[in-house]
Length: 262
Length: 247
Image 1 (cartoon, rainbow over the protein chains, first blue to last red):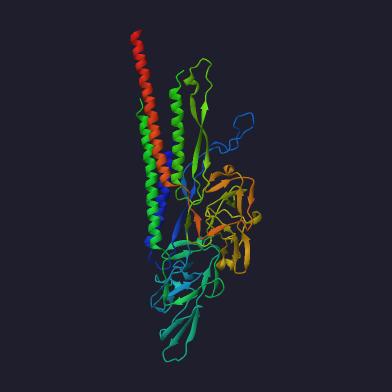
Image 2 (cartoon, each protein chain N blue to C red; image 1 turned 120 degrees about the horizontal axis):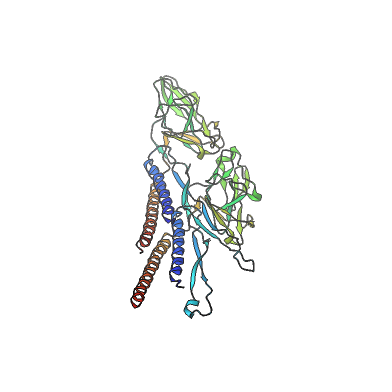
């Protein structure tokens, strides 16, 4: 009887589903977080009788459907939904939200480049624009100590007003990276992604170019997790888990009936 | 010959098979594009000798005949990915099968691979009209959209059309696992016939309540069948005891 193991795969799949949902809910307030979703696929089928084999009659009739028994379910993939999150006003002038496609390139501690949509930036002790974790935003932008005001335009142009000056002065230009397959980026934790073969190489351009988003100063991008839909998915997953455990119980009762037979 | 226990045995085997199918349906309750299966049984009447009593001539065993797909549509499940599609009506998306050839699926998770081609969640390339993969130029990625008739377009114009294939005989469509199906002699729908719903996928058409009631039914039938075999056994034992006394 395969029922026990088939129902087992069902319970495992729902467990993965709950894991993914709980991670989404846990990151409900994570800046720039993109919610994930588990996609399931049916497992291989055992062919007891192939469809199209002869039914044995003299008239050459064929078995139309065959006997196929599925072996259950498996997780086909967990993919990220790169829907735009709502902009959250923070009032911090170094906070940047990307409206549209693109990631901020940042320098990771090991010297490689990482990508993030978490634009809650700060200044380092050197006056450099860095992420909340202290990673430098590429290309490096240094705000002079005597700057009294900083303005970052929609197109990523960084301007400062120096003490005593009357006009704004451009000190740098932010860039965004876009990928052919955003979903192929590898999440490193800490809101940082790195390039993989699946994502393709980054295309760098200034914000506002065709195919790239624009930057919004004083905002950060909220998580795109929708708590209501996550909770309903959680309920569905829990019930599905229960149903599968019910299958296990029924199979167990059937086996028990057999084993009590004299 | 007393065949009653064999008749019951064939029934128990069939019930176990039904249980396996129910378990597989339940396990795939959350599998996009999954079609629930129904086992099909038939009776097998053994030829009886001429002198058999009338009742014995009607002895029928249960035989496994096949498992049929229930092709009814599943409910639309919104995913938030504007590229995901659900086929409204019959038909399948054609994809490149892992071992070569064409496979079919109703799980409309549409993604873009590193080369800019549309693929399914499993990474198989989706085939457009005429069996060609659909490639999207890198600069069009931001404005990529899928239309109701399957047209894949960017701001610069159409780059291909997702083909939907229908089969005259739905029974010839067999599952091969991983959400893929094998089938032959399909007909590609024209743009005017194609109806896709974007922004979500087709959920599984398994109805948990129907499956649960089936399960209860199977369990009770199995217990009854077991009880009958036991009664039959008791009957035989009593007969032997009694006949032994007579001797």
